[in-house]
Amino acid sequence: MIKEKLSLDEQIAHMKTKGIQFNITTEEQARDFLTKSNYYFKLKAYAKNFDKYQHGEKKGNYINLEFAYLKELSTLDMHFRHLIIEMCLTLEHALKIRLLNDCGKQEQEDGYQIIAAFYTRYPEIQSEIKRKATASVCHDLITKHIDTFALWNIVEILSFGEFINLYQLYYEKYEDKSSFSKAIFPIKLLRNAAAHNNCLLNSLAKPYSIEIKANEKLTRVVSSIPNIGKRELRNKMSNPVIHDFVLLLYLFDRIVESEDTRSKTYEKLNHFINERAPRHKDYFAKNQVVVTSYRFMKKIVDAFTESSV
Image (cartoon, rainbow, N blue to C red; front, side):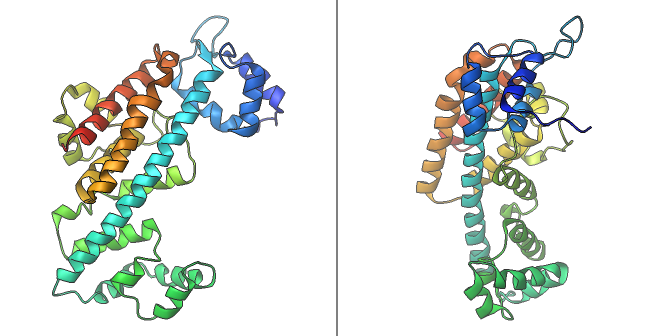
């Protein structure tokens, strides 16, 4: 359905017709926020977490929804995305270390055979590498090794998704369950969403955009965390964003070995979940979707950051 373009004043007026209120954040402050910090289409997405009147004169309008609540969720989402990106970059680096160390110890692999197999399975990769040679900061590296890439230098030029494919192919050939190679694909989707500034915390309420099957091993690990009930576990781990973030945290905990890196990351996670996220908890006190999602995530983060599960 084609919708009419709205000016800032018209956006404010439209929100008011939908029951969105401006008692905490004034209309003038809202205009300033929509001018400098976010835009209407993205901000409105967070309203999916709030109930609407189902009957009567107000049918279709939001129930006690303040603009400030949407603003706060969008801000929390920004912090959440930044954490995800940082954790994914760290995890990617740790995966590369692991892969190259394992290759160095694998007598049957010279570092070139696996790249030949990689090109065979993903022939488009060679074309993509040649394209990068003309428009990439990796120009010199690509030009030097264009016909002789080995495992240890090709990892420097692959995208995260391409690297995951290579990582999975290696451990398909040289099986090692501790590599978690079969579990890492969802991390690519989460990282892409965060890197493209997609809304993540707008999908806390059902129905979700996609249906997922929770990772069985991850579910068993989470079920061992104190005070997480079976129903809570089932409901929250069916949410794609929550599931994939918990998976990211689990893989980070298992694969990243640098104690300094782990400590700094966990410090940031603790600050977000225990200080920044609940700063305006009064905004969401009556919203069970937000409250229960937060409590579940807090239990997970606390369990991983206070001690390994």
